Image 1 (spheres, rainbow, N blue to C red):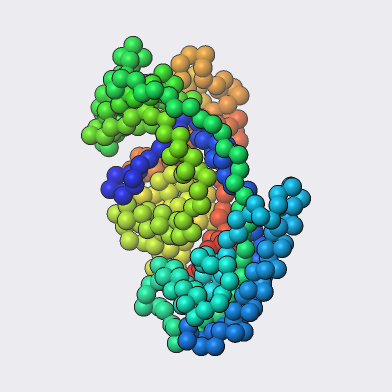
Image 2: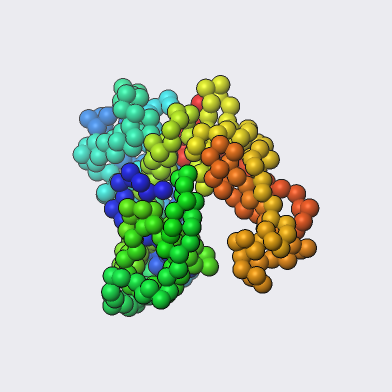
Length: 370
């Protein structure tokens, strides 16, 4: 998944739920309040009296609202870090863009110019630089204040690094099918590996909640960089992260249909030239309209006998086929295993979810689809 992607580093937790809970425990406390402003200005050289007064007045009111919420938890106003945001759009257009500004009051024309520059920078990322329309003037639709208070952080120990070579006593081998051919893989239990171990592909690291594949030519290492984990989990995320991930996904597939939404592992909702929306595999195989259940359009292999279940689970560790069957949903285009269901025999095929794409784009992203 990370080939050709310009990531500085990738962390793979053995227990994703615990990793998520750790991030929640380290996150800052935050309250957010917003108020409609609806105040415009032609450019940074225009009279800013009315414009600045409306924004400053709204920010002050919102600070009191946020402070009162924190006061219920015994947090004093002087302990709060206030962050100042605005929703800005071109006058006459429908969609605004939220920005964070580096000052707490609008006082000078330089402040107005900063608002304009930040807005146009983000606007250009979303719609392209050619779509900018500064001749229309600028409208601040909403003033926003977020109040942030640091949370108590756990004191995490640094474990000493061991040898690079893992203990071979815990190594097994297995034939795995990867990219059209069988290859021998070294198999490790993730919990038995030690900090400092380096695993060279082809290898499979197994844990009750995670299976991590290391292809040939790749190396992974076990380390516990707690400060990096803390920074990744507790810091604010990029406001344009959805667009970045969408761009990465679009560049990773061999077809040109516009991706609207990552739908599941290997699956996307794409927009066709006729504006229809279909579920599509990253290999290019198209299943059905997004309103239909894509699982009904795939190859389904059902493990409904003890012999079939024992192919993947050792005896006594698999389910009882009288009570449960395993359904494997396989792409007919590339033979990728897309999903597995564990359900009672005869249970209807599960329709995972039907995304409301228009509402997501309009209400969450402030970017209605045309």
